[in-house]
Amino acid sequence: MSVTIYIPGDAGALSLGADEVAAAIVAEAARRGEELHIVRNGSRGLYWLDPLVEVQTTHGRIAYGPVDAQDVASLFDADFLHGSAHPLCHGATESISYLHSQQRLAFARVGVVDPRSLDDYLAHGGYRGLDAALRMAGAEVVQAVLDSGLRGRGGAAFPTGIKWKTCLDAPAAQKYIVCNADEGDSGTFADRMLMEGDPFVLIEGMTIAGLAVGATQGYVYLRVEYPHAQRAMASAIAAAEAAGYLGDDVCGSGKAFRLEVRMGGGAYICGEETSLLESLEGRRGQVRFKPPLPAIEGLFGKPTVINNVVTLASVPLILERGAAHYRDFGMGRSRGTLPIQLAGNVKRPGLVERAFGLSLRELVEDYGGGTASGRPVRAVQVGGPLGAYIPASQLDVAVDYEAFAAIGGMLGHGGVVVFDDTVDMAAQARYAMEFCAIESCGKCTPCRIGSTRGVEVIDRLVAGDAQQRERSEVLLRDLCQTMVAGSLCALGGMAPFPVLSALDHFPEDFAGKADTAAA
View 1 (tube, rainbow, N blue to C red):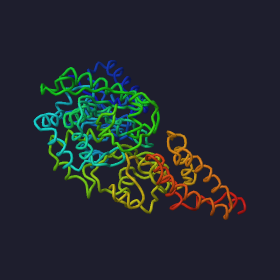
View 2 (tube, rainbow, N blue to C red):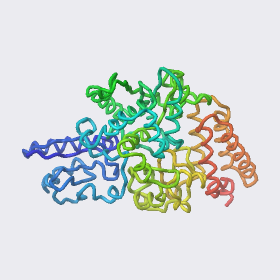
View 3 (spheres, rainbow, N blue to C red):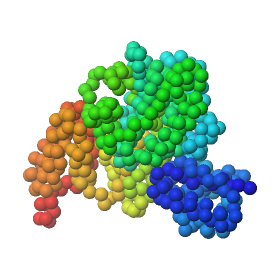
View 4 (cartoon, rainbow, N blue to C red):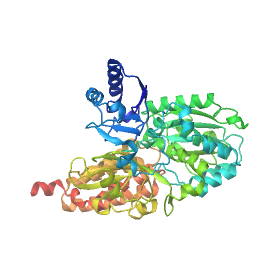
């Protein structure tokens, strides 16, 4: 009797040796005459246990990890094909505390299904949201998304339903849906995980968006560093087209929606929606002036909905179970769940999807297990390279858009990067400014020139004596204010956030080298 074994084909797991583990399991099974069915699923997001090998038994899936190719023979010796005990065994996968305590909505199927199988997607509730949407008018679909409280998960947290309604109300013969899959923030991998582990949910979400606003063409703008996601999306799109879920007659409805994947050019600025549109149209990625908004005049001058991967992947559930079901998760104006990515100096890195409202401390200490080095946490950067550095004294802040804004931070795309007490926060502040200088599109002066001057001022601040430091700090704060108020987009407008937070919370790290030498 064939035994089904799940081995992740996710890029993160591959980097940890998942392909070698799969090859070793196949070879060992052949040597022992065991019949196996290997499924290359997405990662469960427990990267501290990847490659996580799961065996389907009569008692459910049993997890073993992290598995190395050299461990395979001992797994067979222990009879792991029947879920037997082994030092790498964690019991039932769903009972692992890291996973069991999560509230997975967008990631409900990631790691569970075969991402290449449309039949598996359908068997796990796929396309029920589209079925519901096809029985509704476009305005009703938009209202459901509006009522759910869903906000953009790409960083800006703008209400998704308002964006869709603006596009719906814009008169045009041609409209577009664009998925921003240019996931470039440090410490983030949720978009990649979802596209590689459950690509059909993104396709379904984009199809619903198209039907809702009257768009017939969609594009996934994917960062060039994601070749595995590109292959997964291309395969899923082909399968959806063959089954009638994409094309000129979606599910026999008489409505058209077609979808293509376009690869980006590797520029961080193309994560900004108007720069993305410039790149998608074949030009250099540079920020556009607003207004007009893309929902009114976007791709090729036509009304365009631009949403992040996780945002669009959240839509099918809202249509399937209703706006109230989704809205019941979360707190305040932050409704639903957020896939949070733990990275940096953390013992248990991975993806945690929870409803808004848990504390940052719970994420870092309970899920993350503290620092990998075992040293105290000193700072946490949330929201990518433009996010503020949050000191350990503020870790009790709730994961909520407004709560973070109140302490000068932002949730962004949900990336959380942890630092221990050996980090040099002055060096981190300099890195933020240097990153902005390197990645600036160059269109506006505050970002292009301000970031370059910012690096120079930080260097003088750190190198100078007390008097020079005082002058340099005043100048740096003034420069940051100019960048915040005068930049065209969030790159220049938010690059000062990590700099100012480092200055405010860790002033001792900016003590001049001259003082240190004198001491």
